[in-house]
Length: 543
Ligand code: GLN
Image 1 (spheres, rainbow, N blue to C red):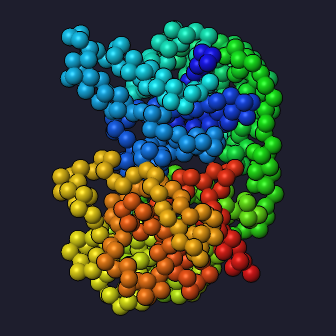
Image 2: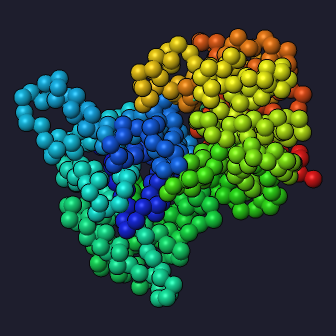
């Protein structure tokens, strides 16, 4: 195999400039030219993983096949590269330090004084190389979290600098930066980006490309300024104007020949890009007119710095993918379930939706309101899709309402309930008792056997499937027989541990809950079959 190549993507001026989408889009472009590409996220946090971070502050926790709880950008990489990304591709400052300290305790540094530099950057480089080897990538993209100039990510930059020094012709840098257009001035300003490029110089790094995130595309004058003051080729100042859809970005970059330019910088052979399937998706996104109204019922407020869209990004993307293939476009509405606790009359408003989703969640707030909403959509035959907590609460609703077990509950809400329809297995009980919350949920891919004659089978067309999980509580098999009599169909079972994975309510147009998170596996080029069937059912409700 040829020498592996590395592209570091860093952010300038401010956060949320779209480093993740840029990294994913560059990755997709290079992949479409026949190269094997992988992407890594390096997060500056001390947290070992994203699992213990509040999604309303940090955004969605994304789960990989091998059960790592990662930053949401790993989800972007998987969606754009249409491939699975594993835990080797995610690191945090905490994870890096943890390893170094562990090695020190094991005498692996052979009596040396272990120091922040070089030992931390060396560990970062080691992790980058491990991820590259595992995926056999020709090109590895490493996205460094945070913004150039802040204290937090400096050791990741140092690692990048060292790797470049060791392999000058195999490492390049991409600075994704924001170009403001102040209203009063009416002209795009490059100065903040010039400063970011200079900050990067201070860390010993010269960027090769600048991706200019702005409302508009760069003009000739701005490109020349960036070239002169940031030390790049004029041709390598690349426009990234606001787009209607993130899936358009690779096509914007292709127009600017970014793929060709990167390959030339890396001394790799240029090959024609195969973008037809992607172009078809984008064409569909732009042409669909008919709207399908999906209500997402949950407990929403206090979203801190992040918006709901960040906390549920994979659900939103999965809905979009499924809509486009059904030739509709989604209109999502966030519905605060606590409203239904205060004022049950409001439940009637659910009628206006073509489908209802109850997404994953934790804790007690808003849960009674969600159960009321589930009862309403079950009785009024509105298509229902329950994700994780959404399946658990649907089982509780049927137990309460159809079986008349009024105090049916999950022990997450009431630890002492006499009827724990959702309970905790002995192994998890130990974790909870010992306050072991980090990385101890049921995480990652598990198999599931699908029953014939079920909605699940119609969707998957397979007897055994595998999906990703992130939950602590489980359906209590003690209630299975009764609930089956009440009309529930348990159409998906994990064969290894006999756990309920899918529950359906057949006397209904489409009512299905899953213990797993199918959204993690939905991609624009391969929408998830359950989401596709849910949207298909919702579409039937459009008058
Ligand atoms: N809170 C539930 C559990 O831990 C569901 C988790 C989820 O929805 N992701 O089992």
